[in-house]
Amino acid sequence: MAENAAAQLERELSALASRAPPDHVHHELHRQSDGSYHYEDSRFTARIAPDGSVTLEDQPVVQSALPIPIMGTFDLNDVVEKYVLGKTLHAPQKRRFLEDTAGLRTQLTDRDRERSFAVGRVRLLVELERIVSDPTASPERKRSSVFELWDGCASDEDGARGQHVIEAFVRERMPRNGALGYSDVELAALNARRASSRSFDPYVQDVPTAATAGTAG
Image 1: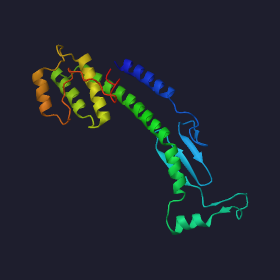
Image 2: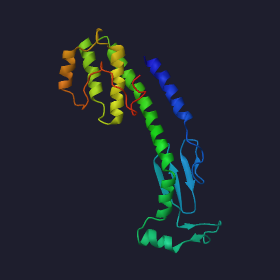
Image 3: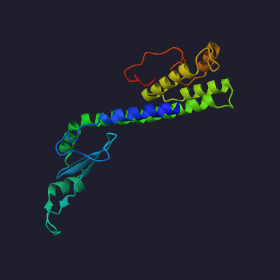
Image 4: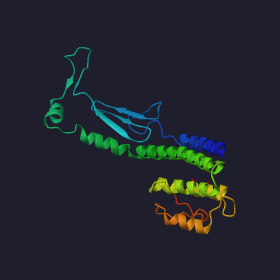
């Protein structure tokens, strides 16, 4: 199971890498070797991280145009706005940059999220396999541990996806009529003490939503 999960992870990560964004999606915005993007002009620099987060930094108010310190560009308005009035410099230009790169940043965020889920999915499957393969645990203890792992998933979309992974694992490795299968009485007892808003009913396979499609197999 662990080997199969690792192989599937490799395939999923390769597929995600093949969907890499283009190298140039904005004027002078360039992709770096670490997957980030860099932009620079005379007013500010920007770095879009591989996860889609962005950092903006103002260029120095005084910039040396020649190797002589007293030579350079000096914008008194910038000095007054930044250090006297406390205003954000170049707000319209920064806003335009963020608007122009919104699509790229969303794509990067989505891809990073899928990559994180693919890695988390493998770890989850490895832990599930460890639980059911533990020779020292009783079948009841194994079923309880799997339920606790399911019930401990976050109450957000990613948590629901994790629960679908666990439910699929139960159907495959802990079938209803098998030695590790949950009885209806046991499921009712577990659901009575669950924290999750979803019911633990792994033998009823939900039709995955767009957000969970392809994650429970």
